[in-house]
Image 1 (cartoon, rainbow, N blue to C red):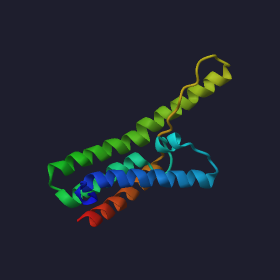
Image 2: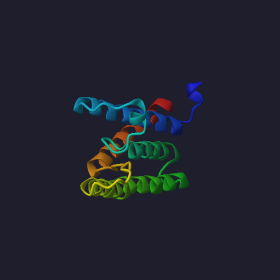
Image 3: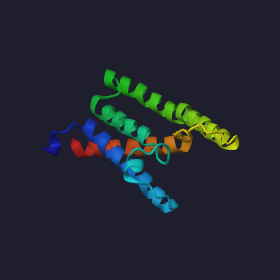
Image 4: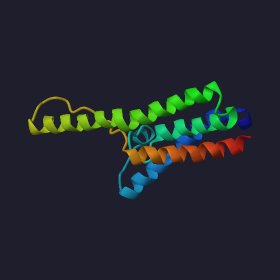
Length: 144
């Protein structure tokens, strides 16, 4: 039954799970207590699970379909958008959210404090990309 699952799907499931396991271990080492829901949907942190997962899929597509395939072109665009979003857009909005929270607290406003998603630093994105490429290669080798 497991051999009937696409290597593309395996890359996604294995990498997403592994990245969040690594995040959980890092949180434990730092002494941070996270609930199950927080852990599954954690935003930010090392490594970037979004970048890792999209890079693992990119790697499997490269190894199966080749660098000249249309699917590889689409996957390349997808990885670039995800990485850019993680380090530029989401990081920036997270910093803005932190500033808003600080203003709310300093002015003692009764405004509801918003949830802030941190986004990622460049090292978190780079490690996520490397982590994803390695796991994508492992999935490819294990499924072919």
